[in-house]
Length: 207
Image (cartoon, rainbow, N blue to C red; front, side, top):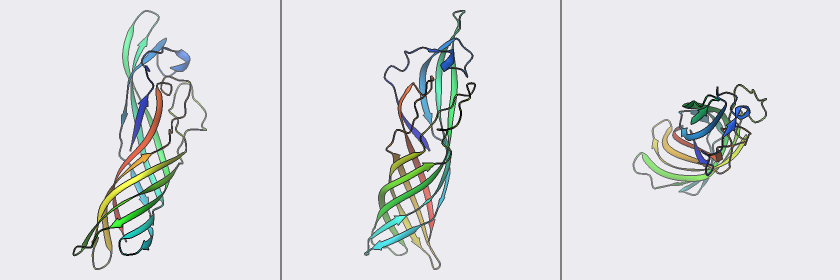
């Protein structure tokens, strides 16, 4: 899981006072650099489908996704004594998504016990761990993200047929359409124009 981040143009220039950097020991500060960091997660779901002929399926795979993403900020701090210092602050965002994807799958001709396929479709996500409505702690500034998001899933994989079940392996990329950042009055949120969610998955299915 990761964030696709678009910083504000010239985000390095504004200087922030103590009220907007309350978790940093400095009189003022400027954002110097910010980088999104991917983190591993875990998901589990149920498969339901409608077959459309020999080669097409419409799939609904509701489930839960658990994970964490973070942004590393390099910040230039200033004191009243003229001292400058570069520090790094990490802001993590924990997410627990209810995921409701609808996928249209095209399956190629079966070759012995293997069948390749590709698919795409929208996914509707709801973050149960969103910090949107939680009270602010001035000594612990948190990045807050919206609860809802809409994504486009694109994937490909193989089904392997056994005597007892069908085993699938697939890779999937999920790209969020919405800007999920909630803009707040602090150095971390005001340095970013928009944030979009990205998820890369390796998925195993048993049917």
